[in-house]
Length: 277
Image 1 (cartoon, rainbow, N blue to C red):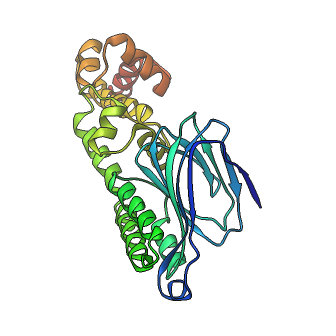
Image 2: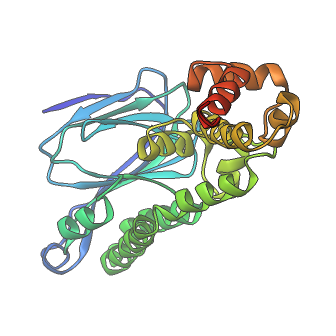
């Protein structure tokens, strides 16, 4: 299956016919290029004997792959097995991305190792530089060994990111447990672990089952419940101590989570703990 509509402001697509030596020994490039798309750009395909590195430079795109939908933000890279059904298209006009189709060596085994949890990774501009160098190597008739080494460097970088993929979540949850009473924004949490807001929010929800905002609010409500049970502090004092901006915000959040007001909760707990007459 292959459906393609390439409507682009800029289109560079270099086909490389790999040598027999490269096919038997190296990671070898099949295509490499650079697109800046128009809004109606669209790719859908499967059954292609190729692996794809798709690096977003600017703007963004949407990827549907493996039953999941990913938002591809700037400085993210997706690694796909093109034998599997996938489709991608711009989120808006001007999606700027660079790509390498490759195969060879132990591509399949390494792909499966890297993409156990996700196929999209937040990376730095060094990946863009490596892809540019691959394109230069492809233009050189003697550049197959160089291109193979550069592909391997990218895959090793993604392999390290995959192994440490949960570290940013552990760091975030630890931070929230210590600083839940402070003003917290999703943007600030994402910046702390050097991820884009879009990627951070999506992966946080996938891994915890809740959005970052819902998780923070839930943590604050649990802290407030403990204070309601163990102190005589006022509702305003508890709201401030648990990170809520004011009493009204606290009462609404508490009601959504618990189904009663903070005072109702405190009275019920006090009654339950009172000695029997």
